[in-house]
Amino acid sequence: MAGFSYKTSWLAVRGRAPGEVADALGLHDRELLDWGTGTDRAYQHGVYVAAPVPGWTLAHGRLHVPTGFDATEPPFPDWLRMLSRQLGEVQFFANERVPDYHAWARAVDGELLRAYCFIGERGEVPLFVGAPTADEIELGIGIRGAEPGWEQWSDDEWTAWYETTPSETDVMAMASRWSIDPSAIDDDTVTALGIYGQPPSVSDSSSNDNRG
Image 1 (cartoon, rainbow, N blue to C red):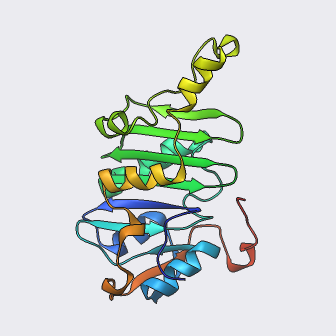
Image 2 (cartoon, rainbow, N blue to C red):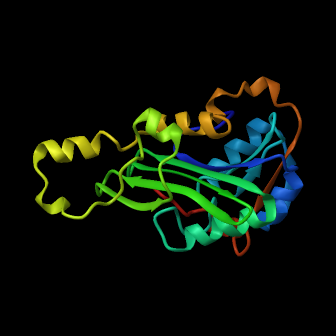
């Protein structure tokens, strides 16, 4: 397959070279790979930092962006802050049909400005940092987090809350508004090589990891 979009996670970094992004991620065992091979490999294991598209460098890895946790877990906000201290503006996106895991976040110069994550399988919003952005408000998604008193909600209240939760296509819409939707990239236009590598403490022998 070529390209990436669904059932994976990625970073969009503003105005940085692939080598800078690979360095910030601590990638080792690096290889120079074309877009199709690199993105396909990153669906299985490791991270592929693609050649820049206008204004943005994308780093894709289904299992290893980030490594060892996801946007539902406590280390995530500090991880994104740390990357943005090194790289400036860093955006994170994720979607998985099972367990209906959808997330987006944006950090600039070490400050986490906005972060949202929904787990449909549990009906939870485990991450809600900052106020909803104009894009979320216009799309009507990600605008409500965990709210007190939900145990006593009526069916209508549950329906109204659930209508603000995202689908995987909504993640792509957010990526398009904040930076770039990777599913909209014409694969044939990405001709330069990108950097594929393994994050710290990950070796090829651990490629059996699986998020779902």
